[in-house]
Length: 211
Image 1 (tube, rainbow, N blue to C red):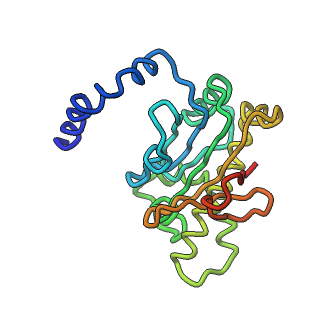
Image 2: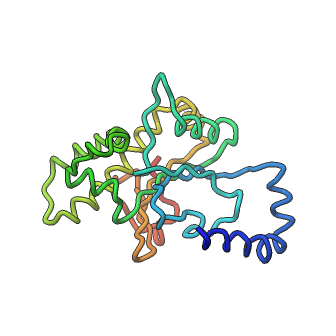
């Protein structure tokens, strides 16, 4: 904890004074253009690997970068999606999985989660991805886990389309959806090409979108 406190003191002393005007503006309003949904994994820092400033990304982080389908009792993720799309009017939504995801590894290996009932219940929102991966053959457990990471991004893109605010924005053609997988070791991103259904390197396919 002391390391965290020291970091804050450094920010207050060295960083904040150099960015006073930015934070003065942000204190009054925010106008992010991108809703970024990613995993709560400590190794995944979207502002770092996209090199964005404070105020640029509206971020949702949770285990497995999951967006539950819209239902009669919407929770915090649903409320955040609705606010981002209907109030902030973001133009893009990114759902970003990542390599070596613990949540997807647990699903892929059929790990018993009886001792983590809340986690087990939450990961049921990835059941469609689990079913698709279970129907296919893979040479190694790692290959299977990697496939699940990608299928889960596709599944969550399908889930987010069930949200009324997202469905409306898509119908009005004012919103794009993106599916990314971030490779922690290599610092690379593969993006879902909605036209082919394949993940392609973002570095050479900058215009690719999922929807």
